[in-house]
Image (cartoon, rainbow, N blue to C red; front, top):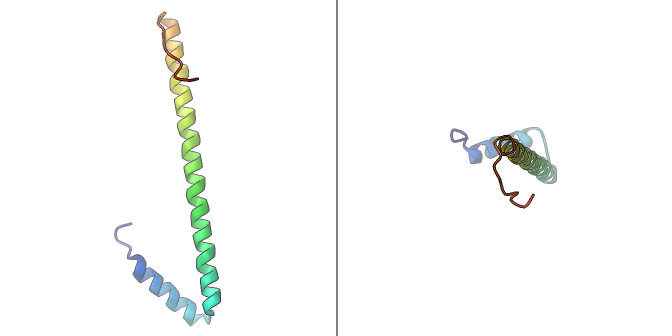
Length: 80
C-alpha cells in the first residue's frame, strides 16, 4: 500500500520487540517466521490463480466447442 511506510513500520515493530524484552535472536526468528508465512501465502495465491485460469481456459474452450458444434463450424484444439 502506498500510504504505509515499511521502514517506519519495521522501526516501530523492532522498538516494540525491545520493549517486550525480545533478544536479537528472538526478533530475527520472528521476522523469519513472518517472511516464511508471507512467502507461503503468495505461493498459495499464485497456485489458486493458475488453477482458476486453467478452469477458465477449459470453460472457454468447452463453450467454444459447443457453439461451433451447434453451428457446424470447425475449431482447432490448441494442443488440447
